[in-house]
Length: 310
Image 1: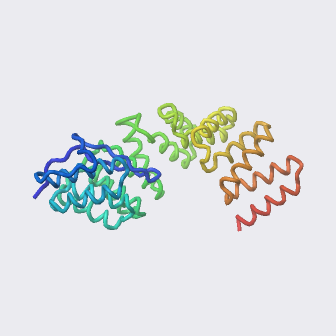
Image 2 (image 1 turned 90 degrees about the vertical axis):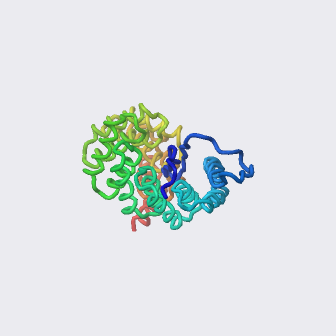
Image 3 (image 1 turned 120 degrees about the vertical axis):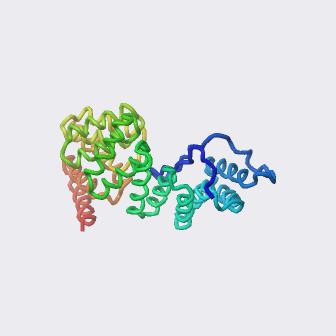
């Protein structure tokens, strides 16, 4: 028996393993309120949704399981239970329930997208790719699935297929978060720094709080010899996310290029503090110590660089 038509799905985005719920119409009852005998499964489901949105994943998991016990033919219940299982680090079981939700409601692209997210989180990339492809086939305007699909293609060195997805997103919605950033990564891999710069400029104009895009733009500008502009974007990235890997290394390079040796040395030291296994930071720090007339410290960092390289 096919479950009732579903509202807009609780969608899951796992950038940095962060879960974001977009709930459909109708808010659940207050947490802890005992469901009425009539419609008990739906009441548990709504309570589980509320707990999930509040990041109370274990409570959501318990409630979603109770909802599913009332109606095992309901795709929405399998879907939510699967998401809660993934959130409490039980991915194998999660995949099974998300696949069951798809069996019950195969035409819902959101189910395929969420299965892809959980598979991706579990490191099952090829299966995730298939799930995202199915979501896009069902709904070519499902841009979140397209973004995931493009990222998987890019990470597996299928740049042409990745570019196809990112361009499709930018044509449908040029303001879609992250699309210009990912286009820039492909341009860089293809040796097109000017195109990468322009794409990153578009990204930071739309989303100035994107620290990673600010950092990448700063790096591209440094490489193109636009040091002052590059440092401006690196400073912005530092204000947003001062612990980004490689950020202080790039700042050190920019300061060195500008002749600001003391600031370069301080930035390189900060990179080594944050990323002690960063061989490139050790090497730059050795060069900066050498240029500052501190050969012993330079030799110490060069030795650590060689140890890391070996």
